[in-house]
Length: 325
Image (cartoon, rainbow, N blue to C red; front, side, top):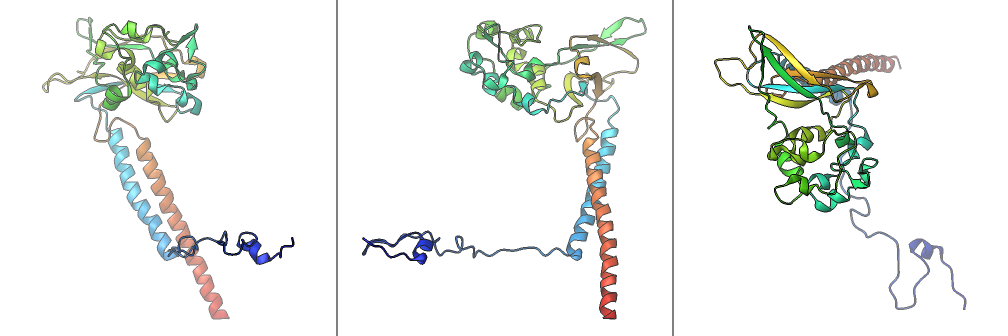
């Protein structure tokens, strides 16, 4: 049986249908959206609209950056509560594989994830045929030096400074993201069947004698698990509380810092440091944000000046050419 061929039928979606049937077509519906008839607005970029934007950004960002930078640099006086930080350099916590090397379900106390950690934790998922708790490269590389601060008095007898280890982690991390596995009062029993990370000196259930600061809810561990964005960073270690408004938190004098060295840094050519600092309305001392604002504002203002000169030069040339013609 012969069939007539029509090019229009092919464009519309194929050969014609049987008599009395509905014609099939690939043509979109005749609507404003499918036929691309929606109203649109496209800005026309001219020197009169673009140049003010560059100057406004520069005039706003530069003063803000200077204010943040000066405020950050003024955090020197040891008044109020004092925060003790440990710092590391040349340590890339922002590496993609490193950041992914953890199991949030395990850290949240999930019993099945405790004994069967995520494959993202490889090669720190199992050891000695047992699941590692906590698993992953982040937990395995936890900072474990011990810092102690002493004030040397007139009698040369060192007086220890009270260092508070609670209250250094974010509330949401401590109470929401990190939980110990369910079970009885014996924390060691709850972690039964697991083993410690390869580089740890002791298992997770022996991090602290305080039951509210042990296991996955240990605040030193929680602080370390919040990865840093830059290779040079510092993390909160201890809090020195001011006891009286009549006396400074750390009186003037000689101090002795005792460090129990457990954390090697020569493998990655890094450095360690201890920082004592107060905080301001913008937090601890960190000049990066102020420098970033100043840099962006200065670049924007400079681009505005360059574009203004270029526009003025070529506009005058265009006007001269029109008059000549």
